Length: 367
Image 1 (cartoon, helix red, strand yellow):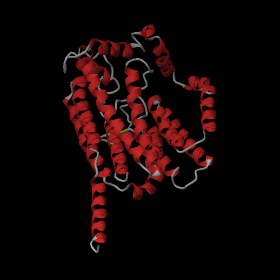
Image 2 (cartoon, rainbow, N blue to C red):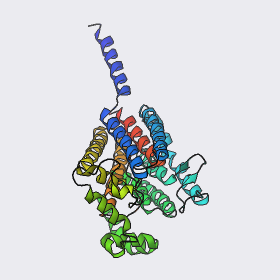
Image 3 (cartoon, rainbow, N blue to C red):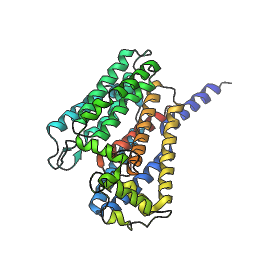
């Protein structure tokens, strides 16, 4: 009988150690496979070893951060998460004042050895800050929801000024999802949806002419096939010509002959479809499906309010990126400049996505 307290304490210690070392191998494996596959497809689409090597460096850096962050204690980090909105807002303002000189838009800050896209950072920081803010006390008031909404609209507005319609929509979602998951009443949600429909004419006339043209092209891409409809027309040709088994790696005619604009970034799904066909697309869907499923399990199984809202929000944002990019490439949504997570070229997006996975894995240790 005297040995039971000692045995019990040992079991508690071993259980805590296992939780600290707990790591979802399926999440890590799917992320690594997708990222390595992305590096190979970037080389195929761009025929640039330099671009592929640069993406590999970002992958190594991002994966190292993923592992490091996954072992962090989210309870101790929660106070920091509460105020991380403000550095993101600072960089959104900074990029409008000091944009990269080599860019036609104000989306990147040039630090010499690398460029940085603040909007990608902001769509990651808003869920952190919003989830911490809505979880800081037992009862959340409507004023708290309104506060999160106002600051989300402010960040969305600064991203729209760059201009970047696609990422601004993601930034908006990254603030709205925590509000919805936080328990906002359905009456207020319905009023918000109704207000959006009423404001559609205002939103339409506030868009740039080329953004309006992209939306018009969605419904009739053949109307301007050599102009605004070129991207969609070429991506559809590439996807259709891939067939079941594809044309083979480095053998896609549309991509290798540069018919597909931005084939290494926004339209890399078309390159995958052309070179690997239906089987390659199914492989991609299986990897994404496995990743999203395991990420949502963490939110479902968690008891902590902050962790539950944050993990669900980050998982939904990742799913939104995947869905919007693929629907854009196959012509179901307007072209809005949305990278395919872990696969498209882009150092900032890749590192942010890997850090996102690290944050969710840190939450998993307490489930």
